[in-house]
Image 1 (cartoon, rainbow, N blue to C red):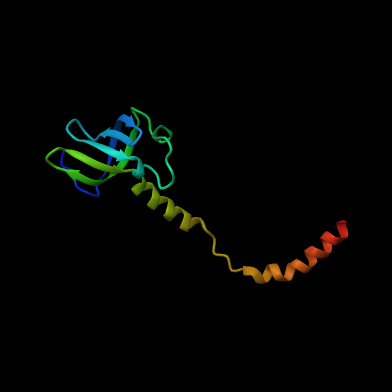
Image 2: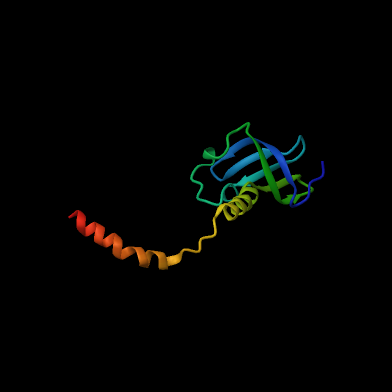
Length: 115
């Protein structure tokens, strides 16, 4: 199969090293998900994210057509998706600090009354 940079493909994890996970895209094409491409956050142990035999969806960030070796990314897919979901879920808040300023004196009076 012919792959291009930017393609999103399914792969199977075939090996794990401290620096990343090796995957098979098909019978002829292998790739590496470097530890820096697994998650946007800190990755202490690759095993916390993938195990041998896992099916993963990855994005091709580089490929060598001669050696049929691909550089792959998990975070390129999920990082953008998380940003979109976060933006969609955040409510627009127009309250600001003026509401706190108005309520603070009453809160302080109540707190004084409890003592």
